[in-house]
Image (cartoon, rainbow, N blue to C red; front, side, top):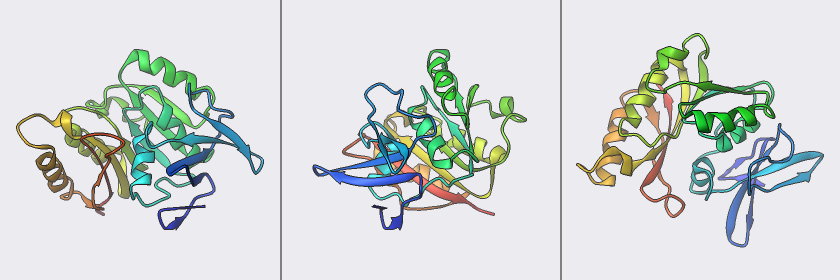
Length: 227
């Protein structure tokens, strides 16, 4: 199986079923503990489904994101980990030699994130505010990738501030941008254009990927930091 023109990594597979594209990650945490998430055993491993309707990362893959977006052995800073559903799939992708530093502010969501970390030993939850990245300097090293999914008006600024502290030169940014959270002064298209202009000062960007029909008024932005 292939993912958008490139060979799938050993931890990521894709298939088309009933006209729907699904992705599977090889689980480090055994059968899925996520409610409603399917898993199966194949080739001596447990695989967990990553559905476009439940994960913006999967939606971006289905709509054209080049794969594999995250590499085995890579350290990742994940901003806005929530309860850890997609973060645990990212942990699957980087494998046992990589670490996902998962930052979440909400204590309620963080409790469920901690439960996931009990099954994924390479998932490191941090109860911190992503607007205050200085509070986790010393806890997070330089990383090869930054993934962010935070529906806030200052999403771009949060991403840039964290990238300046933690993303190594040439590292990759993956930003699930919620356009409707950026305010009403501009249209979603204008917000996306403004975000791309600002990010291009620091990153070499791929073309942004609108996430409809899976997520309304969302776009996925991927790029590589300038050396």
